[in-house]
Length: 82
Image 1 (cartoon, rainbow, N blue to C red):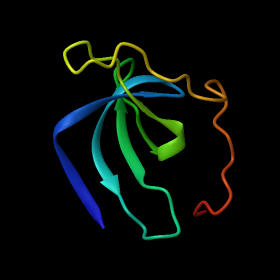
Image 2 (cartoon, one colour):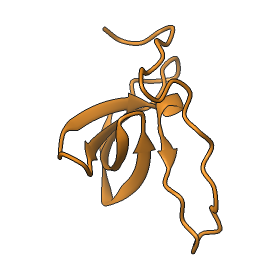
Image 3 (cartoon, rainbow, N blue to C red):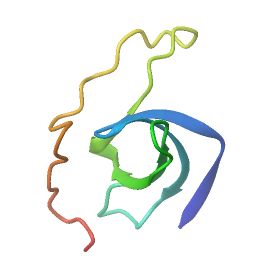
């Protein structure tokens, strides 16, 4: 199932900040996939849950964001669709 996020959600990705516009749910045995357009260059990338974080948001009390492991090179996850 694919769901449009409206308004788009600001997220941190291994390639930098962006806006998540869609989320794809392949079912119980899979991570959600987030369709993100990067702020820096407008590229569209799809990331799994462990690869993204919500951006820092002082209003919501989120003062810090947990670092993403392997920020330069995203990890390979068991059970990913190919």
